[in-house]
Image (cartoon, rainbow, N blue to C red; front, side):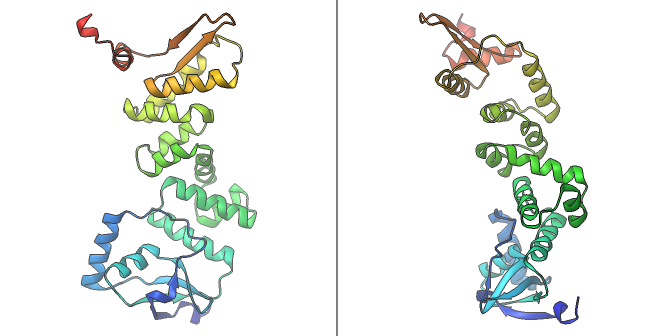
Amino acid sequence: MSAASESIRQIPVDLIRSGSTQARRRFDSDRLRELAESIRESGLIQPVVVRSIDGGFELLAGERRWRAAQLVGVHEIPAIVRDDLADDEAQVLGLIENLQRESLTPIETAQGLRQLAQRTGMTHEQLAVRVGKSRVYITNFLRLLNLVPAVQTMVDEGSLSSGHAKVLASVAPETQLQWARDAVRRKLNVRALERQLSSDRRAPATSPAKDGDWRRLERAVAEHLGYPVSIEAADDGRGELRVRFHSLEELDGVLQRIGYDASNG
């Protein structure tokens, strides 16, 4: 790395644009305002990192600082210009900074790692070495991309922890949202969620494969009740609806959902 690549310059904020390889997509508005007030009082102490592009500059690291500076009307910010970096190296730099600051959500981390792997063709082992993490760390985060979008949103918003997310990533896509909502509603910790999933997997199969209409109906009823549901129907129209619960408290919850008040029974 040359000395020139490490020199700090004052660059107009309106000449800087968000990086195309930026992993971070969510910015907490309250924390952004706090940083903006700090910049108003003390200035921007740590420079952002950019590279020259199309008559301006592409942001490689420090997007939160750049956004906060704009909030308080700062016209110029200190920046290190890294025109020595190729696209892949630029992405690695931004991803590593965010990982070190722990400023990415679990899903942003997973998406950033996947994008880096796709661009470079690196294995999980090579990714781990490049970003300074373990191979297990890389594999666990990439598994989060097996989650359906609605569950990914719950993780990003903090309704579910990354621990819950890693457990749910091994669940069939069609039941992930049901289990995620159940974990939130019942305030299950990660270990309790694992036990519930293990118990459900051990339950014997009670019917042959159903067609798509019956599976969709089961999912709709389960989502409405908030509990696992199975529907068995014969060709003549007879059948049964089963709702699985794991405690008397859960049974009370099922009864309340269908309008029955056990206290008046």
